[in-house]
Length: 159
Image (tube, rainbow, N blue to C red; front, side):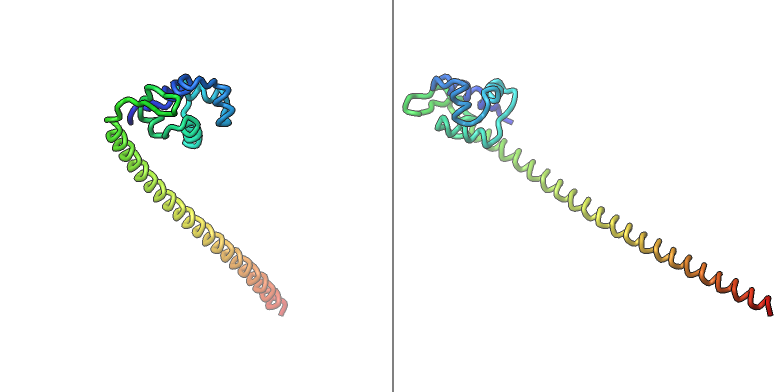
């Protein structure tokens, strides 16, 4: 994957605009420590937080992530380093997205297979229970027949 400029751009935009961690924290409703962690690349923000930060600075997420922001004027104009590598980054991102889609499809297939196996096992268990109950009924019937036969034998022996 391509280099991400998000952390560097966040730090630089904050400095260009003279925004403190506290100010940005309040504006986007994220803790100061989280913003510091984003700037120091300890953690990556969610896409939702990326959108809030990009909107706050009036910059696209794409520029925040894939372009090196060199300057930020008072008119909210962003000066970015040449983005000749953007098509390459986009191609890499699309390729990665395709890989993720394939993995998603494979996982969905696996889930379906496991569901089918589970259903099959549940049916087997149900059949096993029915067979067990049938055999128990048979045993009870045989016991009753034995009792009847014993009584018949006793009657025959009395006569």
